[in-house]
Structure formats: structure tokens, C-alpha cells
Amino acid sequence: NAGVTQTPKFRVLKTGQSMTLLCAQDMNHEYMYWYRQDPGMGLRLIHYSVGEGTTAKGEVPDGYNVSRLKKQNFLLGLESAAPSQTSVYFCASSYVAGVQETQYFGPGTRLLVL
Amino acid sequence: KNEVEQSPQNLTAQEGEFITINCSYSVGISALHWLQQHPGGGIVSLFMLSSGKKKHGRLIATINIQEKHSSLHITASHPRDSAVYICAVFQGGSEKLVFGKGTKLTVNP
Image 1: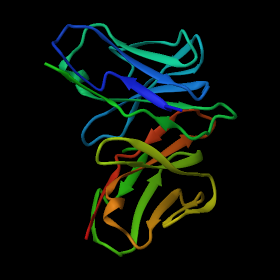
Image 2 (image 1 turned 45 degrees about the horizontal axis):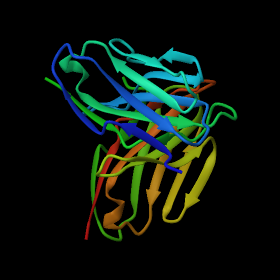
Image 3 (image 1 turned 180 degrees about the horizontal axis):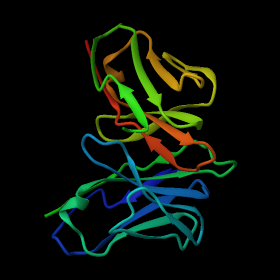
């Protein structure tokens, strides 16, 4: 099993450009999450999904959109990138058998917006 | 005030020392997570606990629900334990984790 994978690993964008980050998991997990990690701050939840076709907002959703068209994939989109979105983005997934389950993290995507 | 506070922020130890990292939270929780973030950035789950104590190898995690406090202990620390240790909590009934800022541990040989 590959676990949770993220594409790309690193990206540089100019302000106003758009991009999509892809998260894929092969563990048949129902729950998937997108977090951002910034220096001096804890991981913050952007959006999450409790199953195929469903998404919900987290703590810092502004400027991002997500889609979960297939159970194994969770996409994070930036429609018009801003320097404030420079961050490291982590995807995570968990199996649903109750809500308090171990989350498995991807390796992260480092995004720099100039 | 953050809902999850960790102390210390940074910790330097000599190989072999006993390490304690603390986590306090201000909300009612249903479970608490300890995670480890390697220097390369990868994040792995160490423990999830809702009461008492758990042990895995040289790592021990305890939680006191009444005092809203958890500790992560590392016995006989080793340079490979150098990492950022993150505490996170599930607020009661929520499927979302709230994270502390992490404790950076450096173990020198």
C-alpha cells in the first residue's frame, strides 16, 4: 500500500495563478482532510470530507475549494493564489468506524506564492 | 488563547535522558492524539488515547481528563527521537482535530 500520496511535492506560483493539489489514498478510508501548516502555528484544517461526494469547511476555508468525486481522491484547488497561501499543505485520511480514528498523513506539498 | 497548549516549545536533551512533553487543553474532548513530525516533514500518529496511559516501546503517553492535561514521555532518548511532537484533540463529538503548535525536540549524542 502506498498509503496517502500528494501531488505535487513542491510548486511555485505567481499571484493570481490557479492550481490543484491532489491527494490520493489506497486504504479505502471514508474521511479525508486538507490542512495547512505555517511557521509558529499548529496545523489548521482547510476543508474535509466524510465520504465520496461530500465536503465541508474547516477552520480556514477562504480562498480554497475542494472536490471528492472519487472515494480515493481529494482535490484542493486554489482559484487565484495569494502570497498568504504560501504554506505546507498536508492531506490526511482516516477510516470511519466512529469519528475518533487515527489519521494517516501524506508527505506534504510545499507551495510558494510570489 | 489557543485551545491546545504545549510546553516546552523547544527542548534539547542529551542522549539517554528522560524526556517529558506536556499538553494542556481548554475544551471538553473525546480523544487526544500525539503525533511526530520528522525533520523531513512527514507526520505519523504515535498514540490516540481517551483515558489512562499507553506505552509503545520507549514512548509513554498519559492523560488526565479531569485536569485536561496529557504528557508524552520518552525514556532513554536517542538522537533519532529528534522531531517535532504535536498534540491534537478531538473536541467532544467532533470529527475534526485541533492541533497544538508542537514541541521541537533535539537529542544530542
